Length: 238
Length: 279
Image (cartoon, rainbow over all chains, first blue to last red):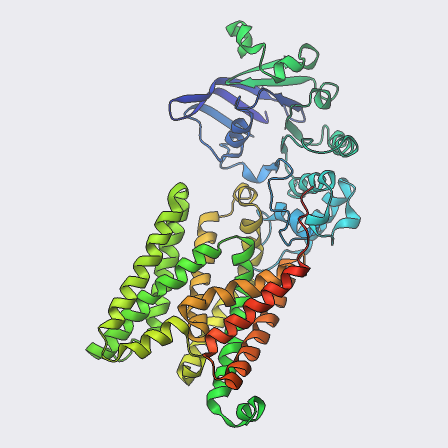
């Protein structure tokens, strides 16, 4: 079992963000996560990464608490949450995914550089390793962030709207890159883009305070907007 | 006598030059972190609150005869305390940090000015502390400055990849299991130590000119933090030597001349700033 949520609740103050969320993810699965803005999708990812602790309930990642499993998790944030003027090269960004494995003091070792190079190759950007991160297009920058997540050889890959704010061609490249990872790592992808997930995943987690896992075929864009959630019977909201 | 002749013959100018070069190294390196981490105002607060340590040390030394306690040691202690205090405020009270950091800034200045005012003949001391006097540097000061330089360079060498990680993407650094808060506080302590080094050159009020301006200029010409540091160090050395020469020629205060020189070059460099790369 890669990931298990058991009756997980989370709230900021009195306002519940997630309520009694229970689901399990098998090793190697590609799961889409949809839901309206403010529905708790990003909170769910933060709980998995151990940035937040549940108010009640239990989360286990590879049988351990999220705080202990961090070295097995790769994270791809929303593309432009960064200072685009930051003076950093593509290779330096990707090496950031090796920090938990690199020696504490001094520079990165040969193994770290090899892993970063291999990750860049996987996303098709080997020739950009010396380029400035700030000079990349939106789609390329997003693929570099995927490479950073892969550089740490994670068993679980979390993506927060990786195709948001990129054009159609870039979206295609990013999804192609994710397709090549199917089966190798367990993937959880938050998205508003239904067609990005409908043919790629078998199951979709719809999150709007509560969470429902449904077969991909049963989900349409109305779930992403949270329109059907309130009408579902209680037992289906699990 | 022109500046070069004077430099060849005056031990005071030679000491000043060495102090300027030493301060340039540390401020170019740490200033680059200050710019990319966007902690210029936090650094300003640390630099101004350092006056409290200098004032108290000077008061104890000159009024109560505590001979070993130099203003530089007082500044060092105050810089570390204020860096940790400001860092803690930043981590604990993010929403209200502006007000609290401004309070620490003012409080530090107030304690410093009052302590110095209690020293007989305080006007000269206060002016030196506020505006710096590179010609005031003694051989023992110079040794301490270069020891502090070494501390900063060793810490940077050891921790650079981790500082880069917390400056670029704190969340990713946390996910990688890095002690982000500890590294942030360590970075602020290094900023504090740099401030102490710079106070002798340009004084409390003008510290930011050497810490932030050269690194800001450098950021326009490179997309790599390590290269930005090298350019900033070179610029700082140029500003120090150029400012020293100009102040000698024009008989202006050295610290203010260095700061003015750096400021003018910064304004000129804005022409070369790259446009925003946001797509």
